[in-house]
Length: 163
Image (cartoon, rainbow, N blue to C red; front, side):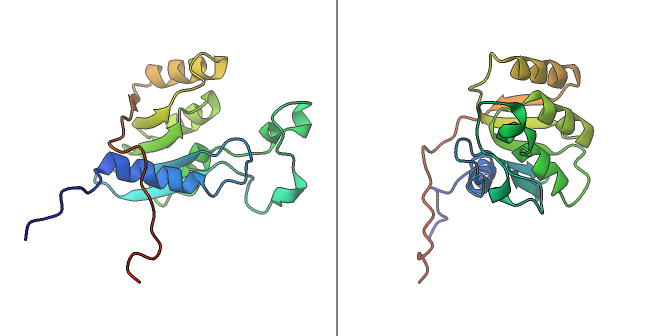
């Protein structure tokens, strides 16, 4: 018998972990996930957008528009920052997989952490000031940017496969 040939490659695997992590987000509008990986393909951090640990999700707003203090933007930590803060070791030379291109605030954290590559799926905010600033920061530090072209449109998790 020969080995299975329809397995997922590393990029799709790690992006899948990021997408799965995004499903932990309580944000009703946008769910983003991140997965940080060492050069030797070990996961050292995952995160999703949500409130800081210890804050009750029901005590804070989830609105996108309105007075700043009455929107999610004043309170939510982005997936990239959570993955960095949840990391288990030095991130120097690591890659981060994110399903949405990082904003300028996350770009600063990525740079400071030593991550050297960003692999992303969507760049839907590419013409916003935040995105332009993010790309300027990342470019000035030599961080590699790569938009992933996944091999699959979807992967289905089957929790009863081996039952």
